[in-house]
Image 1 (cartoon, rainbow, N blue to C red):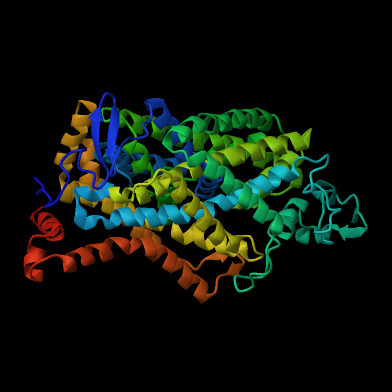
Image 2 (image 1 turned 90 degrees about the horizontal axis):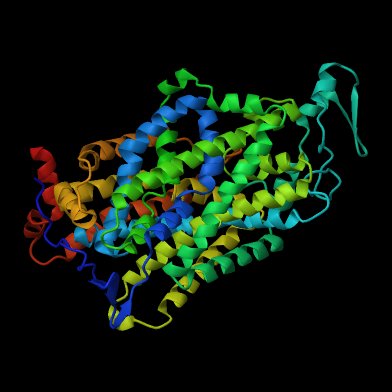
Amino acid sequence: MPLRPLMAASSADSGGDRRRWWSGGDWLCWTGQKRWCGQRSGMDFIMSCVGFAVGLGNVWRFPYLCYKNGGGVFLIPYLLIVFVGGIPIFFLEISLGQFMKAGSINVWNIAPLFKGLGYASMVIVFFCNTYYIMVLAWGFYYLIKSFTATLPWSSCNNEWNTPSCIEIFHHQDCKNASFANITVGSSNMTCADLADARSPIIEFWENKVLSISSGLDEPGKMNWELILCLMAVWVLVYFCVWKGVKSTGKIVYFTATFPYVVLIILLVRGVTLPGAYDGIMYYIKPDWSKLEEAQVWIDAGTQIFFSYAIGLGALTALGSYNRFNNDCYKDAFILALINSGTSFFAGFVVFSILGFMAAEQGVDISQVAESGPGLAFIAYPKAVSLMPVAPLWAALFFFMLLLLGLDSQFVGVEGFVTGILDLFPGKYYHRYKREIAVAICCLLCFIIDLSMVTQGGMYVFQLFDYYSASGMTLLWQAFWECIVVAWVYGADRFMDDVARMIGYRPFPWMKWCWSFITPCVCMGIFLFHLVNYKPLTYNNVYVYPWWGEVIGWCLALSSMLCIPVSLLYKLFRAKGTFKEVSTSSHWTIFILQLITC
């Protein structure tokens, strides 16, 4: 039986500076003066979690990883890690927030020596809020450009196009040797020149939107159009979040459901296009040999943690607004089913369109799909440009893309601000404290984002994406969350706390996962990730300089080191000799428990 920590909070009433009491169906907060806490209904909570966890990662990242790692075979490690890692930690974070009634920092009052977990999650979600919104700024830019008679990325007659631009590739004509030259505007191309030809959508993305430079060391000038788009998105986020959890909870009813309507429409349109069948078969056809590769398991694990939003602290913040007796155990399974089901469904939408594009261009599907923002801002714009009433389809898709990202951004900012406000003692309570905190958060993130709207901005964006909130940092965070709850606070003790909330004890599988299975899975994938580490590249061509790698590792370590640094700080600040402190610390208790096991 795990030993009790020295200073653990034993009930929901001891959440630090922000104490709450149950009164008449709501929680009464004490922050220097009495005020009523924002409270979500069960459906508000479900919709907010759906809006946060179901986002861009489900639309482009899951389908790409699926076809990259053997099609349907990828679902085997994916589903396995869902049940041994995704759902247990998802349930752990939600139930912990619901029980402690605190944000991502004060919730770790259950084991004060490991409060660095809260600081680490705050760093991760701050970085995620900072770079994630750039995808929304790009989507907003495309949305504005969609309101034209002719889509600007569908032709080669623009100032940003090069002589290599070609609208129709004529691969079939070249294959039949029916002609030797292809005339595009004032340019003449032979069939041999098609290998170096570029699609107008690629040139629009790289030459117009990004105006991309040759490397990280050439930031270049800022794109004023992207700055305006970025500013508009941040203003929208601010006014949707500043009033708190009640206003956000109502907004996500629309932002979380509308993308499903658009995905269904796109699927119906996609399956009727020529080549859609080949694309879908490419998506679900298994390649069993891929199971022998470590990268398949690494990608499956990192995708689960990325799409489930584990380790960011936002799920804890959302759970803290639940009623104390909310059945979070049932909610965890419902949300996991929605999240993974959306990823699988989006795969059919994506690959039906990719199959159509491959048939149109006469290339293999693997040459059409790209990872990261490439799939959203290259493949989809090309697809909608080939459809009837192209501007309508383009506006519909990018509006959906904007909504997919906005609800995730809402909850990300909500989680960060909730954690920050929990740090303030009651004497600092101010009527407009929340509005001021949200404004400072948005402004600081906007200033950092200015580095991503330059000509070298894509290289900066990829640094943040790969290091600051990547699978590596999330795996590290999830590992320590399980260790602290299961071995420091006590898995049986926490199961009793959950039973006190929901009225029954969850299946023992959850306790086994927190104590043994999930930490082993997280650390195993983490070590696989380090062993298979390769220098970061852009489009498999540009290799980042050594100092760029150093910046990336600094971003990663800024959150990962919060846990050991905070632990050591508390040990050295404790009263008494080091021997007395160490023999009475949670850390020593944890080590002794592992040894005795």
